[in-house]
Image 1 (cartoon, rainbow, N blue to C red):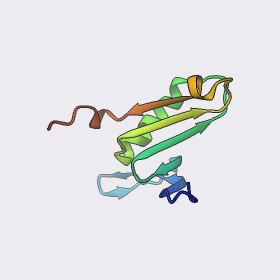
Image 2 (tube, helix red, strand yellow):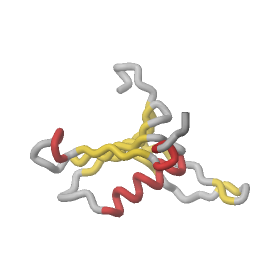
Image 3 (tube, helix red, strand yellow):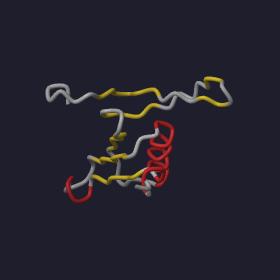
Image 4 (cartoon, rainbow, N blue to C red):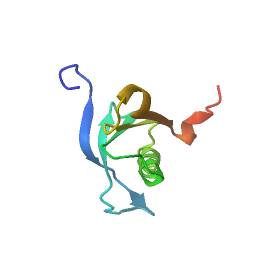
Length: 95
């Protein structure tokens, strides 16, 4: 991504504020790309609901419209190893 000039941060520590206080929850997403896309990378037998919930939580905290989960432990990466998620806050934006 760096070679292509894509703005990204790896192991991005997600800030969290509660009632005006900075809470150190130590949430880290694998990649935050162009301040829009949260990318989580896995290498597991199957992606469990907890992995998806974690990605969706990161997307909500960062107010990111899209998230991408990539699992490298599959035979066909294109068909079985990737899934895109859309943040519910951005799903039905009025014109």
